Length: 437
Image (cartoon, rainbow, N blue to C red; front, side, top):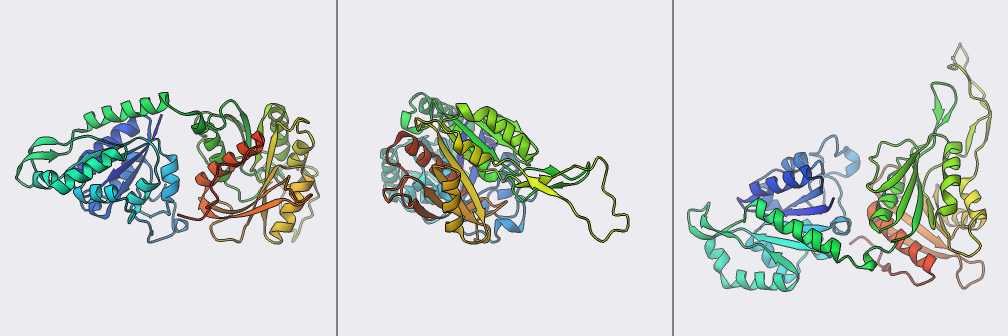
């Protein structure tokens, strides 16, 4: 199933976009809708959110940060969306209806709202479905702009002739959804058939990912855990599958949907996770340990619920859990064909602690972040990381890169491309412009 971005602009034909969003969603595709301000005057964002079960993108600068509400529970709360992330996520971009104004801006390469910014960042098959008054459509400027769009790679689905909403008669009515869906299906099939090897940089490789927290029981009721939600690890597993890898995801208890085409092994305790990793690691070509594994467990689990019984305090003995990352680092293949990436969440001395972990755990890459940095930490859709890689020319000195805040889906893709390059021994094709676009 495909990832489809649907751009909706200011036109009475916006109601037809509702049919497209609904049909594609029912067919099993994932659909994200981007509405211009003018489009909101015809169809509300809530309508598209309800049809696609995805937050509708409406603005580059949301009125409220995502932390103010769960968009899945309350889709009217705006969410911060990285237009670059949406562009990287999509397999197909469709603008339907496409107004004369937006067609002109696309032809000029403008990026002055969420839709045009996403369009400029997108590389892949794309469909433009004009909808406007007949005189606007026939205007030489519009025809010139459509020709430019075609030269830029857009598939133009020409409008129909007939009675227009304004009362005029002529060409300008957006083509019916069924026809647009036919064109979309053909482009998606062509893209799949013609997929270049470079779009599958992990094809033929086995990738092992850990994600989420672990839970260490105290008694039949209570347990020790942490605030990890698994979003980073799940984003990595999903991106690895999209890059062509055979992916195993060892997941602690999280409230996330399993990524497509990923073998998920669900665990609870650190020992459970160790056992699952020990089983999958020998065959893995790239291993990314993104889970927040509990360092300690109780020495003895109480067989019954621990009662307060008037006590003002209680002493619990903790013992160490297996160090999964260190275990894997010590067992990497001697021929260098296994790449190991660890994660480190810190609250102080980020670089010093990360360098120590990189070396002591025998990692090829260490991704570190500070819990107190805005946009980083548990439960966020973004991350701010420092990436350390071993093997720098300066003996014993790792290469250190500071990557600015970005969507976790984009970060996952960039990390995987870097890891693939490390495994092949070549230079990474990841650009160095890791700032927010």
